[in-house]
Amino acid sequence: MSLRDRFLAIGVALLWGINFLAIHAMLGQFPPLLAGALRFAVIAVPTILFIPRPKVRPGWLIGYGLGFGTGQFAFLFLAMDAGMPTGLASLVLQASAPFTVVLAGSFLRERLSARQLTGIALAVGGMAMIAWHRAEAAALLPVLLTLLGALSWAIGNICTRQARPANPLHLALWMSVVPPIPMFALSLLFEGPAAQWHSLATLGTASGWRGLGGLAYVVIVGTVIGTGVWVTLMRRNAAGVVAPFSLLVPVVGMTASFLLLGERPAVIEVFAGIVVVGGVLLGSLRERRRSAREPASPALTTRESGSRDALAHAERGTHAR
Image 1 (tube, rainbow, N blue to C red):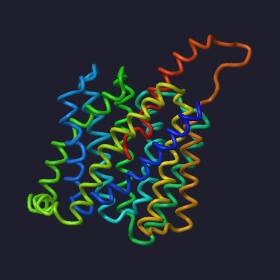
Image 2 (cartoon, rainbow, N blue to C red; image 1 turned 45 degrees about the vertical axis):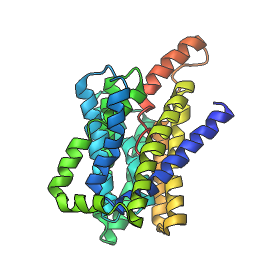
Image 3 (cartoon, helix red, strand yellow; image 1 turned 90 degrees about the vertical axis):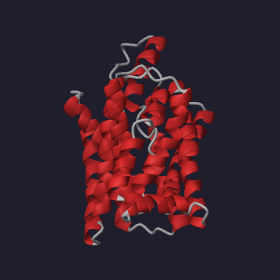
């Protein structure tokens, strides 16, 4: 991986970590479910007009949109609106990685290595510590909602893997076509038209401008720029080299929340976060299967590992932030 690409990968992690601050600003103006509907609607309209639809089975595209888009962001936004600290949300959402591994082993019959199982156990242990600490403070519900968001993201990952898109970026953009209608319907049902109208009618206020700024950041910087650069890095480098950089996202998210929002995580949450990130990293490392006595053609190895790793890792850390 070139020095330029390393800096680009770190830059994407910075963009995605700050993305949680932008979500915090959005939720200061819009009800959470309406915020999710707007976030995807802004991307969906130009996507339908200008981006070719990926040649994948519609069922996998819809499943990806409902899992990654509707489920993940509905639960995440509800959690943050219910009091989930911004930095902690960026960390707990990393549970999508072990969830993905477990779902892949259960439904796709992918064999789990001892290293992956150890990583899952560490990550789950860290999440349990966070949940236990939050339960003592009567703040368990936001953690559970964030975990449901992570599980939804994992379901979206499985649909992505089964879709096997020729162009992952086109699939990521077309996924945005699915969530707006169900999220707007849920907002209408649970938040009500009065709350929707009030958030739109007060866009000229200071809170409204902050909300619009957060929405613009999430759409343009977090999704279009961040995802575009990430997919480019995945194409130029082995996915196993690029994917671990996504673990910088919760580090950036928690640091930025500490500096800009004044959030002070408890010591046990910081320790649990280290355990979670370590478990995710351990579970994402790929074991070397080829011995030194059996060299493979470099061109063949690159093609095979690129196609296999892209399916396994392209979804990790690509959109959510």
